[in-house]
Length: 613
Image (cartoon, rainbow, N blue to C red):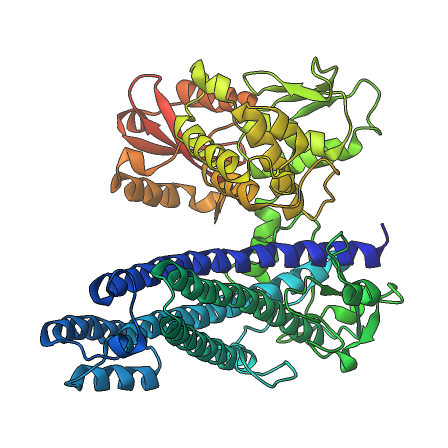
């Protein structure tokens, strides 16, 4: 894969992940619409029940005024609408109409129902606008910094990025970009107005025709269903615009001169995007919606930086806008680490180098096939630096077809040298439900969460193969295989690696699995470095801090088998009287300071591990 293809793939993976975030807003919005449709159906059914004679009502009857009792009941609802509007800043025009309705002495039956339906439309319009705004702000900032990270990491050098001003984001949010010159706020208002007009017209005409209640209910619900589709399209299309505008601004800040259109090439690719895929455009010609995506509603295209000559690119694009300095961006630096150094400025590259001085403790023995399994080793070492496992040895000669892991998680055996196999088997070293069942681990809470996700995944996805995590996972009912395949799919995407064809493209549930796994097993080595000359005072401060908290406030720090044996041996054989009497003590051993909870003679629990500088 050449550099242009690599960048195209990385940028596509990034925008796909951002698209998933936008879709979360859409799903939430759709749930709000479904609840509103249910309320609309109830309101109409109740209206017919009260005023229709034998399920029939003509326009004259519908226009009769509400009785005093009925009017009083409606005004209670109106007062609730006004309260909701004040709390959620619904548009002033509608608030004024509600206040007028509240003051009226006479309201017809039909107008009372229209008032209720319009309130639902106003509420949904407000929710759509807020969802689009929230998605837009999050997408713009996330895409801006992640684009910079991908670019700087591939080049290998980084510069401190200027922070994004809130006014800069608001300027983008308020900028019309479509041919009708409407912002997303304008479009929310237009869609709401169209919904209210169509509902009122449909309702009046169906009463004039003497339609039965069920037909009226279905017709009005259909209008709201159309509005739901429009709302989802609005959020996704506007999010695509915010993402591409963000990329444009980032490219300009980093002096990228040209970019390349990258389409999502699959059976759903439209003719417009298919023809534009691979098109090279100058940044001076970059215009979102015209020369750059999105080219149409629901567009899935993105852009990637394009360089005709890679020679000297590091020197050309590495400049700290504040100091003129540039720094290396190693290939195994994560986005969050990069962001802390180059954006938040809460860490330095020296901090990262100190804390990242990781030497693999795993013994690899591929029986002379080191070159064949080189990629497997690279990714296993990288994953081991990120997650807490008991893995000590990786060999060949698995009993299973591709690979296997012993129940203890200490040994992995591989037959297949594919990267996906390495990820899959590594997942088994992180957690194993059988090991938990037989008391080798205490990961019961973790497995409860994974099983909940698996049950929901099975229920929702079912036989829809387009949403399967993988064909292999679907053929197995094992929770361990579900976990390993979900971890592989989500983690390989996170690293920008191409997934084999037997994996799906829906990451909804695999990302949930990865989030849970990160929460339970991701390493969290303290960023605090300790100077040897100050060990005693800092250790004393740490003990004082720990003494103010409860034991359950601290998670156990899991160590590899060899390291754990060495640390326990050092503690048991070199324990001072003060340490033996303390509930918590810290002890320098080798290159680290270990903080230990003392639960009595030879009963110790590690609760912190920090690097000695």
